[in-house]
Picture (cartoon, protein in one colour):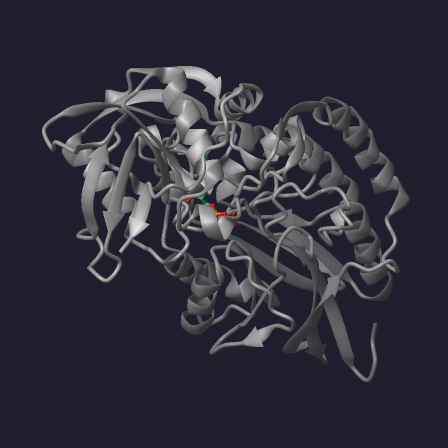
Length: 472
Ligand code: ATP
């Protein structure tokens, strides 16, 4: 790899795969077999590292039905060098994440996660390649604390990424030739690190699903990120001249027919695919209309799917109202035959249906919390049943909600209402602090996906968007 005293270290990087391990031509998701092929190509040219920036083990049935195992096995086959966990890698709970960590043939690292005050994982790893020492420092988004089911992260805290990066650089700078942060912190934080932390050379990012076509230099470091779902694959070159790091460049691969699958990895994936597809492709219901679970819609407004799910939740438990977070609804369902696969892709979180209590005052506070970021997309945007309300987006957050009707009657602040919700919101997920774990009457153990399947199978017609949530 030497040309006129220049040499290159290539870093191939994936982020926010969300379980997209299989090739999916229509979504332009390359899948891990193509990613392996491209990585092997890079390895044949330069010394190469392969890293993953988190949100990997959860998101499609191919990984959720085996709690991340298929992704671990495939990543081992690709010979990844390191990974940082993202917020969604806690979706099966911290114990499961540690089990998966133990099965990886490469380090899972993060420097800013603490469990009962001690490091939860190894903070960093040092890799030697081509006579150079490269330190990789893991960083996980601090907002994991609010975005993840609180039950899965008990005792865990996330420390400020910039502060921790500074500490790590002070410790490692003299020992190594390159310091890279591998960060599931989002682009805004990555830019802050690049501007504030002297001594970091490059930041490989994830979490915000940003597309950076070629690494961008900020005050101290280069920043890059490769979109999502394996629709892009980062290929970043760290460039040395006479042994000194002089710059970083790179590009993103995208899918095309010329990209070949690594046959060994493809065979491994195929074995998972066949077993799971058999279970998933059974048609379980039919819908005459398109059910709207588009991320932009379910995180900002009422949709027919949000209404269908919350109506079914309320009816199943016989509560006054039902509330569920739009961020938990992850895909639309097209008109026509509905398979288990469609439903589980729409509701992938394994959330259970929970009955709890809120006072009228707390219901109102929850609605304020739901629309506080409007018109910005917000995973905590609530879909509602048994309830309708107006809000005024021109007013300051916390003071937007106008009239609230519960089953047609004005909300009474002092009244206790029974509420059907999911086990994520019920314990304060998405920052809904008015939902208190001690007020849970019971967790039905029934999956939201099962509740939706039953609603689709019943003769109940699909609710329309009827003005439950009105911005005015
Ligand atoms: P990424 O975009 O990489 O997935 P992110 O932090 O941006 O990471 P989002 O996709 O925005 O995550 O999803 C976050 C939202 O997902 C949360 O706001 C919440 O509404 C929902 N969510 C997360 N975990 C759960 C869960 N266990 N159950 C239900 N909803 C969840």
